[in-house]
Length: 282
Image (tube, rainbow, N blue to C red; front, side):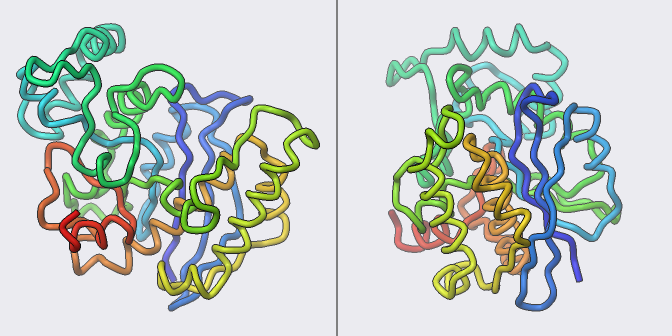
């Protein structure tokens, strides 16, 4: 039996907006999601990364930045190198680099990684609204300093855990298409979004999900209730990351689901949809 985790990340964890950690156990072909825990500080998150293995976690934030950004700013030309550099220059300087950047060829201010283009995810340079650039600044150095294997950048033999990059929307879209399942409105005003979350929860426990991700999924009743009654969707996103972590583990002999053409400066989101996209040449 191996522990499987899914993590919905935030750059400024606190009691009202925590890092959400979903916990599951994998026994052969059955994945049982048993608990959700709130990590209310980056210190608690760092302590989690020190947990002895074996385990695997999918975390919902961009682990890397676009290759062109790294090269244009002449940051160290390795993931560990530029993550360490960014951490040392500090948050204000890093955010200034992102806000002041403009690609001389295209004129674009925000670039996307190869995996972002295929997944339809945001640029990791974005600092506003969904501030994934801030998540990178907070989270990537913690991964870089941890004893964990960080796919695809670093393989460690320390006996610690394995970390992969997740993107829960890729799971949700298989259940409900591109409908939004999150709301800033309190229950019961977000009844429509609650029903969409319910549809996702039913789908991930269905044979259709098993055909895609390879596992039968069970969820305790208390976790289902918590996900339905969480309008911001943090708990559900953590569960969807569990699905991606378990699938990635099943592909450990094939680079954890990371394709051969992955850019090792940028990183990769693990999900079967991206493997299919890659193999089809799209």
